[in-house]
Figure 1: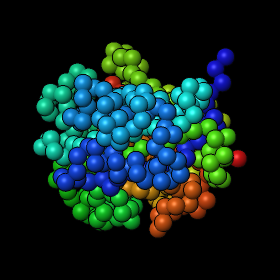
Figure 2: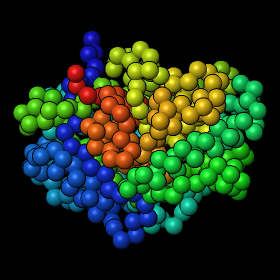
Figure 3: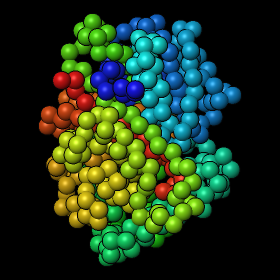
Figure 4: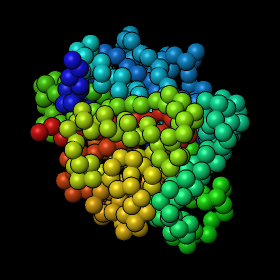
Length: 399
C-alpha cells in the first residue's frame, strides 16, 4: 500500500532569479542565476547532483522538448536530465519529479528547475502555441480573461453576491498583492497601488479590470532536494521537508456534465483533499501559516480560498474584505506579491511559490518575514476553470 512522501525529502537549497523584463538575459542566464543561489544555499558541489528536471512550458529554451538546455546551461555532470511541462503547474511538476526520485531511493540528491523567457515573444499575455489565438487545450472557449470572468459570474450567482461587493473584494486581492510586492526586491512589480486606482481601471473582461489580471515575466527558480538524513550529514539543522505534492488533471467532467455550475475549480478541491490527507492536515484554515496560490486573476484567488478550505462556501468575499489574507491577517496569502506582482514566468511559478514558503519557514524573508511559520502551501492552476491541471504542495519544518 502507498505510504506517501511526507518528511521523506528535505529541501537543502533554493534559488530564484529576479523576475521581470529581463531583456539582457537568456533563459540559460536566468537558470544560472537561480542555480547559483541554490547551490550556495545547499552547500554542495555541482557534481553531487545526480538527476535533474527542467520545467518549461512555452519558452523557446526547449531543444526538441528535451532537458539539454539545463544540462548545458549549468554544465551539469553527465546525469539524467528530463524536461517536463504541465501548463502553469510545470514548476511544481519538476519539483514533484525530483522529490519522488529522492523519496524512492533512486538518487540521493536531485535538482528541479523552472524557467520561462516570455517577454521576448512580443505577446502581451501567455503566448499560446497558436500565436495568441485560443485552442482547445489551453483555453477551450475563449481568452483567459474571458474564461475567468465567467468564474466570477458563476460564483456571484451561486452565492447571491452583490456585484459591487464582489468587485471590492477582487480589488482588495489586487491591492494586497501590490502592497506585498512592494517589499520584495525580486518582484517584477514593486509599486503600491491604491484601491480607487484599481476600482477605476479600464475593463478587460467584466468584471475583471486591468489590475485584476496578472502579467507575464521572465524568470527562473530552482530547488535542490535530498533525504533528511543526508541533509543532517551536511550540517543542516532547521530542515524544510516536503509534506505532500499532489496534482489533479481534468477528465472532461466539467464540460460534459450538468453537475458543475462553474463557480469553483474541481481540481483544486481534489488536489487539496489528497494533499491534506497525505500531510496530515485536518483544518487547513488553522493548520497552515501561509499560502502562495495561483492568482492569475483576482477572482481566481478569491475562489481558491474556498476551494482550499480557508474560507467557508460563499464567505471568501467577507473574509478578504476583513483582511484575513493580508500580511497581518490570520493566514497571509501572496506575501511575496504572488503572480500579480512577483510575476508569472509559467515554468518557474510553482518553484517560485515554494521558494517563498521555504524562505519564510527558515526566517530569511527580511522585511516581509512572518512570525514563526511552520507549514506553508503552494497551489498552481494551469488552463481554465473548466479544463485545468492543479498542483497543491505542502512544505513544513521537520519536527
